[in-house]
Image (tube, rainbow, N blue to C red):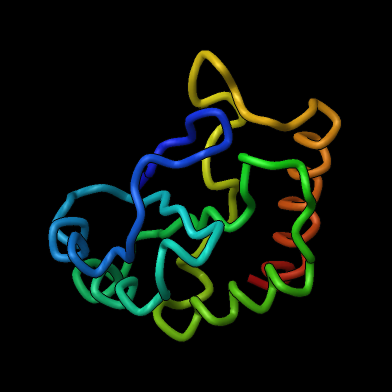
Length: 132
């Protein structure tokens, strides 16, 4: 579920509660859902997605691609474990919330910052899912 990056801004705001029933009925192996800031709401709606199909994966877009400031590894790990209260860790994945150039204008982020974010995703994923 993407809310659009338009030159490091967004087009929509709000929790996923109002569309979670629709998302839980979509027949796909996985869903990519943005959770890079507070406007996305909490992880509670994810429990409906898992209840409708316990094999489905949810890719948490916790790392923003809108700005270069690097997220804290500890905060990302804590958020993943928070999401784990709603859906098993084996069904969770980590990603950036979007690509780094969603539109013609791109985002306010350098190539070096993009690579740093990709490295961050890899490091955190290895820490969280090293035993999974």
